[in-house]
Every structure is written in C-alpha cells, then in structure tokens.
Length: 222
Image (tube, rainbow, N blue to C red; front, side, top):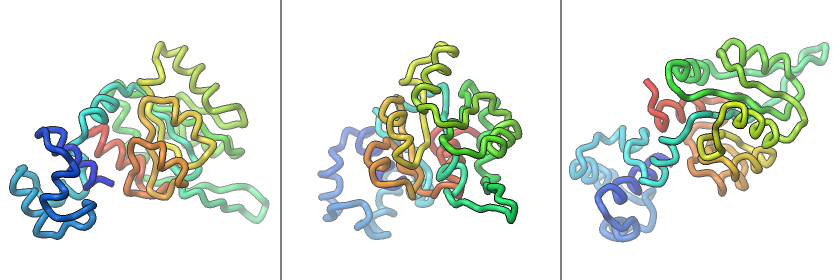
C-alpha cells in the first residue's frame, strides 16, 4: 500500500530503521497510526497528508532503482485492464469493459522512452487487438503460447533484458513472467500468490484504474 511504501521510503532516505520508526509511534503496523501520528510525519518531512497517503513519492532505494530501469511495460488483460468479469451477448460473443482512465495513462507513455505491450492468454483476440490499436500499442499477443516465450522474443528484438521490463499481472498464469522481470506489479484484487511475489501491490483493482495508478504514481508520467 502507498502509505507503507512512503514511510519505508522516508526511513530509507533518512537512514532510519523502519521497525524502530514504528516503535517511536508505539505501533506494530502503519495502519495502526493515528491521524495525529500521520500529521506529525507530514510536518517533520514537509509533505501533505494526501500525498503521504495516496501518492508514491518516498520510494525505497531498491524500488526506485528498479523503476528507473524500466523500458517496457507489459499488461495482462483480464483482471488488469478489465475487472476480470465475462459478459456475453445473446449470440455468444464476448464483451470486455476497459477503463478510460487507464487508457489516458497509457497514451501519456507515448511521449516517453517506455514502450507498452499486452500479453493475454484469453480467447477474444479481436477485442484486445482493437483496444491495443486504439491505444497505439504495437506489441500485442492473445493466445495460448507461454507468456514468457512471447516476452523473450520481444526483448530480443528490442535489445532489452528482463530487468528493463515491468509487468502488471493478477493471476497464476502471469507468475512465470512476474518472477522473471525486473519489476512485478499487481492490482489490489490479485490472487494472494501473485501479491506475494509483487514488488508493488496497487490500491486500485483490475479494471478500476490500476494501470493509471502505476503510470501516474510510480512511473510519474505527467
């Protein structure tokens, strides 16, 4: 969560021990801090309360280093770009609901050195490919081939390595890629197995602006 990451980042920046920092406030976890405690932190480190709670500005040095290396952001579709639900028409055609805020965040990346890619193990290739085209994402794969195999072919073509890749995934079919790339990110409603291997667990759910949250708060684009 953002608050804990910021407080850990404050400790890292100012050479403080995180556990000792919590002890000073007589708590075992940041969620036990009172409003008075948080306001005291804001005053001491010259940050407003909203930023401390919701915007990742004080990152641990190791996480900051990972973020600075990113040249390619890979997205899963179901459960990341959508809420993971399945809707069908009377004729049996599948529908997907994408988040427009995510879309605007993705479009902002066009003016940076960070490329985008979509790798989905779903079946609705036409819908995903149309969304990718709308967002000017050239790297798009929908199919049953192993996600890591697709990613490896892309990074070889681009002259990148796995440390330069971030992925936002939510379920066990993303695990192989997420443990291999430089930065693993997941939405708030990802399965526990994915949360446990993620460097960043976002506060927004899949299909509810989690991609935009990562771009704005961590890549800090725009």
